[in-house]
Length: 300
Length: 296
Image 1 (cartoon, chains in turn purple, yellow):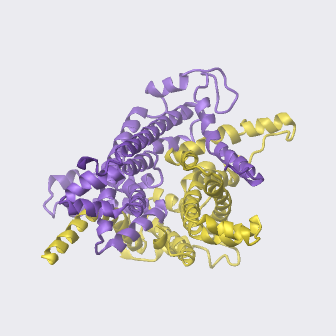
Image 2 (image 1 turned 90 degrees about the vertical axis):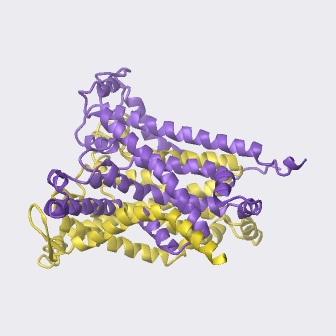
Image 3 (image 1 turned 90 degrees about the horizontal axis):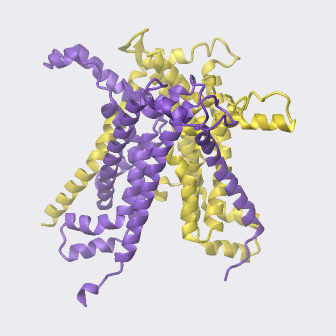
């Protein structure tokens, strides 16, 4: 049955291969260069092979307080992931039932996705600035007492920073939920209801197991988008920096390969999460395939 | 009974959608409204003053009338931004369309389709800054390209404009954001009924005719959505332009950042409103071409 490949196939395949090389080539170059010897510079050739630049990062007297920024980004990423998954699945369920305000939420999500990040970031920074000013000026009069007197700023990793990241991850989560439910067979839910399942039971035992692989996908987007987020964080993160912000700050000042070492470590975390999620998705799909067709077997 | 049940269902739906709505209300809609309000406030060197003033806007357009017919800074900056935007849009569209076409029409097994799509998606899940830094060993003065060309005898001193230049900015933006074209265009193409293409061939259309008269019109929604993504990203970008332009290139997003760093909130807000208006205009024109809601 296999027909012969046309000439255009080979041309396009070559184009695709070139594109993949374009995507990965530069990244691979810095992974290799991060193992430069102690005398090595920012470009090829390699001047020996060593872990020197990684050691320098972890020794503490390196370019940034890597450990602290790393943990901050990790904690924030995990919280963003969790909230993105829960809020997206919940909102996705609401969209299936329909509710007044559905259009408003939909358009807010789309707008949040495409309004330039710098504007969202500025807006969040501005909101917190106004809040700070209000507390400084009127806090005591409002009866906030010592809280107002000691108030520095409401901005922080888990206030303005978390909000900024969610405006970026939640639209992706919602769009993935739309994609899931576009293909979802609603008769399965009706069957569950006809068999007497409560709404929660039908969600827990029918809907969730079916959509679980895609829900892992939402988590993947939630974590990775937060872990690498830069534009929205830039103005809204507050007094401390996340890892990507530290990294961006270094691009203008650093002239040694420790920046590559930091890049390699950051990417390693990304790749670990990506492959863990992909394996989880694959495993869940396999499990579904195994258990999927037991319809009627209980009756035998 | 029916009414009680349905009002209960409505309440549940509200509770489910509520948390996400709240996040957008607090961290997106309210901030946007505040940006618009504050853009109309007065300010001095160290604080904003809540009094109606057009200073944010007049400062932005300073010298525009006086220096005519010479273009003032803000117009020059926007022209430069639009130029970058057009270049990146054209390149991402060309590359993205070709990649999506290959994946949708030339890869026949679903497994391979998923694997190759993943290959294109994985970089999107990794850090943008790292993908920018990654060009340094290739394009820098002593980078692979320069040393390669030197060795080959094509040039006798390193090319300076490879890194920290407009060229580098466009290259990095295409590198980072072609993904946003590939996904929606692929999504549109995969829904095209293959029999339509066979019918076109049977009716005697050449490959190019089929592409132009059948595939491109049917992939239009994807092209429009991808274009909206890429254009809005590039219009507001200040990070890629900053890092890859060596902090030397002015752009629409960069002005906002500079004003913010100077703590001139009303001026930053005024620039944000201008940028928002222009972006909105572009989106409005593009979305005339296709019903966005139907496509998702």
